[in-house]
Length: 145
Image: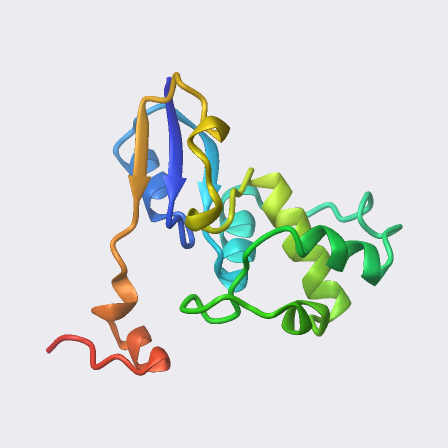
C-alpha cells in the first residue's frame, strides 16, 4: 500500500485520483491552510463528523488550539488571530475536528522535514487550479480563456 502525503490538498483531488485508478493507498498527512478546503476535504473523504469529543471544549479552548496553525480564510493570505477568534463556534469546532481527523499539517510554510516520516512512497501537491478557473475570479485573478 502506498503511503502518501498530500500537500496543497484542497478538497483531495490527489486522493480521489488514486482511488479512481485503483491504487491502494493511505493518506498519512494532508497539508492545506484554507479553512473551507480543510473542512470540505474531511467531509468528502471521511464522511460525517462525530463532534462529541469537541463539544465539551469552550470557544476559547478551540480558538487556542487553532491558534497554533497558520490558517487562511481565503487561501491567499494568513488569517489574523482576530479572524480565527471571530469564527462561529460550529465552524471552529468542525475546523479543529477536520484538522485532527485528516492529520492536516496545515500551512506548508510551517512544516519541518523532521515531522514527515521517512518511509513515504508519494508526496503530492495540487497545481493552483484557482488561477486557471472561474474560481480565480473570487481572488481577483483573470483566469484562462
